[in-house]
Image (cartoon, rainbow over the protein chains, first blue to last red):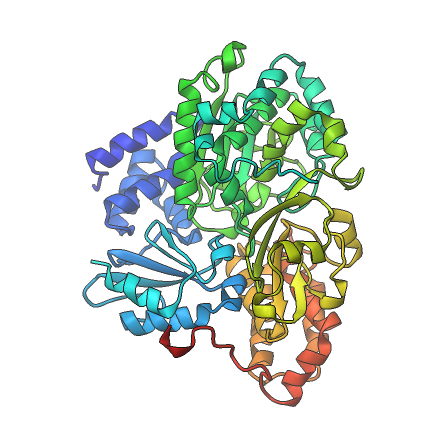
Length: 157
Length: 427
């Protein structure tokens, strides 16, 4: 049976104190598990979370498939999420998308062959005042131009 | 001259600490609140006329007054800010987290809730980290915990991260998500005030709404009412302006500033362009034409003009903008974000996206206008939450107010607007 790594389990035990039900720990638990499993949630991770919270696996699966930030396929070491919504579109996100696609050589939801980057088309990230923008892992990159995008992407190890 | 209220600490890094926030007058509202009867605080907020800043504009004091008698009770702060065009709450959390903590604490004391969850969208990792640090410091300073500022009132505050779903900004979708479920909105009634988080009475307020509360306590309801258009539209308001303006950003004005003044405060049109249309309240709001530039940006004036103030996310479009392409993009968003629970919304938003894409690609027909309105009429009012209604707002306005542009797409069998290139010469 799969289990959470000890550090992840310890983190989850802290989380439990904050909620009146175990079920409420599910979203935080999935965030923790996704960090422990290199940015995505293989079946093994879902089973570990389900076992830890004593929830049916079907319930965990239902939640994972509902939310955009949980991944069920391997992702690159860096997740490149480009905002494609209207305010960014009005300020040139189309060219930013072309640039990212050209630089990485992969399409939407694909991973570069070296496992370095995932390219994700994303909805509004709440940074419309600095459009066009993208989010790489947890960091916002704002007021982009194609040349800045190329520099940023080249800097990712 | 209007002095900023909600954003006065923006640009003052000291305000991130309890000490610095206190130095700027912070936590005085909470101190005052703790000497008052909870019901008197609710009355003061009612008297101020504060309306919800998240989108619906429901009177905050009235919401607090509806709270059920059972215990425990909860406050859930809606920090899920996902409405395209909206970025004001992120600013409040990243630059002045204690203002929000203070507002939440006062609300909790007023409605006798001992736990507050701040539901923040999963993408806002920076804001979540800043809030968590500030909450930690507030515990250490005795502002949160077993006895708030020595009053004997117990209060816990928890930052709960979402995981990327617009629907979780809908208040009952948010409660489901907080409880560890898919964020699918609930049937109402019962309303959250009676059966909310974990089956308990719950108040749900937006970040900006709660940030107004400390100021109402320190300066009084009469001061608050003195700002704005009339007694139904009161207080300071954050406007998030994006799109074709020189200086996109969050601007604080008295509620009811005109769109023209707002545009001027943001430096006018981008590169001196010509205004074509604007969306006054985020992606859900019907689009308004340029000749409404003198519209007062308050709840009732914008509603009267056939749109809505919503989250006051103002998206500005110049005359190079293709409105069919723009509305098609919004339709794609709503199709993606429909939770799938109610058939009219799940199926209807898909049809809207398909029809609008077809029009943009020059494959539309004259009858598509009627068809779009027909699909809209089947979505509107026919689902559990407001997402379906939100999805039809921009579409209906496109057909009803900007039909000649749609017709041009049909007649010319293609989009008459060339794709605007922003970064020429390989920038």
